[in-house]
Image (cartoon, rainbow, N blue to C red; front, side, top):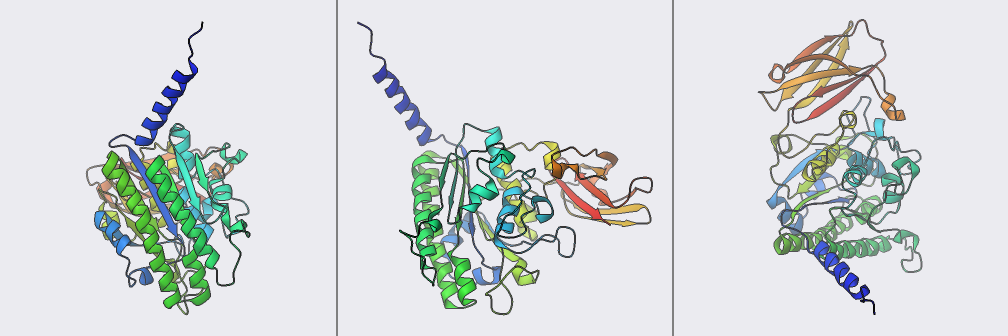
Length: 413
């Protein structure tokens, strides 16, 4: 009689499954959350005990969206545009999501999910969202243009379910969906401990649009803070029970108009003014003493998750990490009379900076740009002048590469 091996195999599979959900001490995890449409001045005056508790572990900082105002990277302060700036670490001139229609994202600029899945296919990714397009269009799950990227778990699309969530004029159904999304995310984090998770909630923006500055909007923010408390408790459970190393970032995608607070999309200071809350350790002086951009979150998450970004793609990312060492910040580039004057602030005074330049932008079409090494000099010099008089005119892509971080600027004539 042959031995029965099926029960043994089932036992092994159960043990493997149990071990996977238990986790390992020190295992790195990321949760990032976008709560829609809350300007910095409003979040700062609302009681938010749960966000404050998270910030005590790491920090709170005013941030910005909208790219470099008045330049090639100026970016509409619109929801999906901001989400994609976080996901890709780039402004709209690269990722090409100009509004909430999401007509033609440029998937050459990879999201954090695509980088993570390509390097760690065995690890778990998850999206919990009150808007289906976040996964299907921005992350681009299953599309040929994203290499048929697949996430391990998704919980979204309930805004299309009018049977269980009938669409009332006051948008209470969106709050109910937010609640369902948060509760599922908290339960899934507790039980399954995904390595990279995104939670998106919409109700605060809806109340801003409907009521503007005032109590109904503020009440929605207090509700959001309670939801963040549930997520935070789930993360704390994983940290305390299994010793996992969780990095949490909570932010928003845009501010609000200065007149009534009902609108956004422009380049006013209030529409561009956002914020970040994080429990991250080792926050650097750039986080503490500057105003970081939403594009800085993606390289920060990548650093925590130990994701290696290939050089050609790293050259395209507009953000820099908010944790750990940096080489330089605040680059500027200006062309006059056949020369480009560069400046920056040295964050690593002992290092050097390599100055790369190309006059093409083939990257956006999936091809390669030929970079010229124009100079290498001590980073503490904080300025350089490069001669481009013999190069083609009209467009220059300049990259300042240091040991710990890289930054780029364009000149578009």
